[in-house]
Amino acid sequence: MKIVAIVLFIVMYVLLIALPKRRAVTALITAGIFLVTGILPFAKLPTAIDWNVLLMILGTLLLVDYFIESKMPNLIADKLLAIAPNVMWVTILMSLFSGIISAFIDNVATLLMVAPVGLAVCKKLKINPVPMIISIAVSSNLQGAATLVGDTTSIMLASYASMDFNDFFWMNGRPGIFFAVELGALVTVPIMMVLFRKDREPVDSTEKTVVTDLVPTIMMLAHVVFLVIASFIPEKPEITNGVICMACGIIGILWEYAKDRDKDRVVRVLKNLDYDTMLLLTGLFAVIAGITEVGVIDDLAALIASVGGTNTFLLFTIVVWGSVLISAFIDNIPYVATMLPVLQGVTLAMGVEPYLLYFGLLCGATLGGNITPVGASCNIAGVGMLRKEGYEVSFRDFARIGIPFTLAAVISAYVFLWVFWR
Image (cartoon, rainbow, N blue to C red; front, side):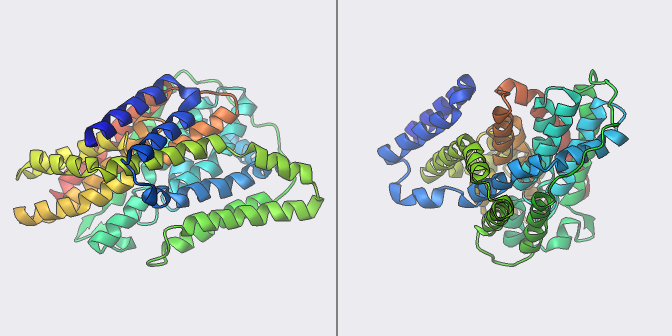
């Protein structure tokens, strides 16, 4: 059964690359085969799907159309254009902007809030939005590991290793993972300067946008405030962030309807929701749960530990780069959950502190999803927004930006962690 699951998983990825317009169908059919063959028992399907992520996407998307129509993204775009000398620096500023926000709230929510601004910038400049939205997505993924509240995997590590918020900044007399991640973010700036070196067209900021409705912006900001507050609540339900986004989305859409009584507008918003992205994520969640169920992730974790042996440097290197490779194709949440006890056992046997390997695991697993457009929920949401705008993103398009970002960020974090935590 394990071999069958692996073969189906590989075939699915090949089809995802070959048929970019049929990704949701491909993932759902593969998930259906997993259920029919018993690779994933039907009883485990409800818990296999990450309802928290789906609710975050759905709740935020309810507001996105109103947010765009309010002209607030255009106003923010005007401000960015006023300080950027050319198109290249607009892209860099947008990436850094999304990264800063993502250090404190979930990266999917960050993408859905920042991407409309990026799209507004690109429309004003009449340029292809694909590079900018991909940059925003990978930057959002990059900064998630910087703080305890930035990503689910960070929360998992903090819970498992009894770390608090400050430990991500300074721990045991040494700089924490925050500085490793931020160093990676800084290193991506020259990478972007090389990738977008031809985008030297000057930008024009003479147009002054007038915002027509502040309510969608207020509800978007409410997302941020409540998500940050919720991140400090211990032992909260896993679905908390999703409920917050849904509540903000529903309140926003009800307010807009109460204001203008325009049923057609509400119907249009509901029709415009990116159902394709949500179906793709649903299928992928089920498939990942299936290969986890048959023990593939356990086998990968055991392989990493066995190959590393008792050589700390070799084990650290394998954990970081193995995690990058694995997380490019497998959801990092079950992988990190599996690896944490494995690494604790290995370090206990070696008589060394586990934090070097813990931080290496978190960096590799968080950044690895940036290699492919389906490697992280944030990437899938970004590609979905581009598809709605009429732009199809191939694996090659994404890899052109995602791979240099990943290599630069991982190498710098890898060196930083070894220097301070070896």
